[in-house]
Image 1 (tube, rainbow, N blue to C red):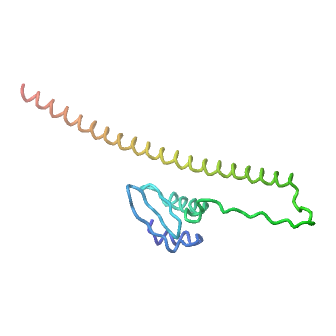
Image 2: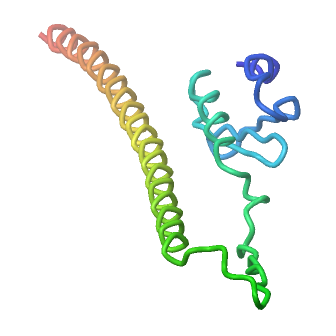
Image 3: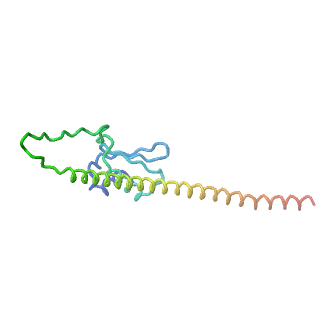
Length: 156
């Protein structure tokens, strides 16, 4: 797939018009804006598109702060009763943490699926290559045996 075709197919992706592709270490590196994705050099068009779309689901690394900024608690003036219920605040924090744990699990599961698919492609590549070598050697063995048989016949 050409970079032009990819930009056209993925026109709905913000910033895709700045997409660049390069080949490094047997991987296709895709970069646009502050996003990036990498796929195997033999990746299909669908795998490339999936990698780009997966990359934009997470914030780019440049937008993730090293430390979360502290949120200042609202000042409570004397004479004004507190507007928050400590029990509901605890429940809100628990809900936020549950959501965080769930999202982290989803991210991890997605990364594991990518890893499993990549390793499966590697196994298929090795199996195919070894099979072709074995076929070539087997074909040469038949030729070798024929030559040796002819040689033995010529000797008498």
